[in-house]
Length: 232
Image 1 (cartoon, rainbow, N blue to C red):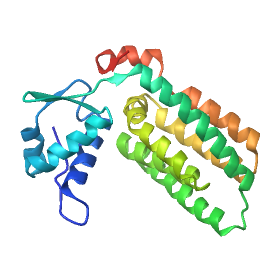
Image 2 (image 1 turned 120 degrees about the horizontal axis):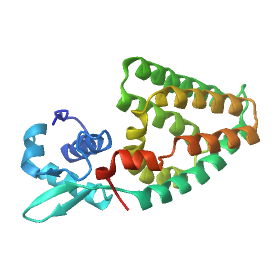
Image 3 (image 1 turned 45 degrees about the vertical axis):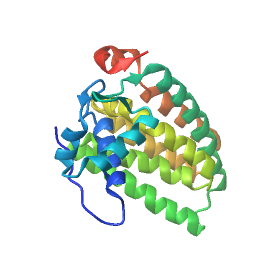
């Protein structure tokens, strides 16, 4: 097991431990159903058990781990039901949001110019991740692509809801990205979606994003291939 060692700065060690463990869960370094222990993780991150305990408490509240007092901690299995529910909500919210961005798009606007810079950088990082066959880096740049566009309309409630769903969905998406040509297809769709936004074509944006979610949401074959990772 490999976890990035922590450093000290303005972010608390508990917050850093939380992020490191969560990343390891999302990228399957810590596999669904795997048994882990506070001391083991504390030793890997070279910190005391106190910040690790705080991190696990937060992860438990997010249903990423299960804690058995005086025994061990188990990485939560991926719930098919939760993933389907989260996918439905995310698709509905993002389509509405992306259509609004397309409606408001003005190439002369400084806000739009800044979004163009940010999205272009995210797409560039995706291309580099494909070249390096780096699934986790691609997933992070994929998140940035969606985040930059969603954040454009400045709706804190929407951002909060989507953020809460993201980590559970990302565990499945990390599995998907390892399928042949999946990253390339995702990047092409992102390019087409952003092009439609810049064309103020709301209907095309909605159609492309619907296709994007339908094509890349997890399917029965993926679940069967990784059956031990899932629970109903």
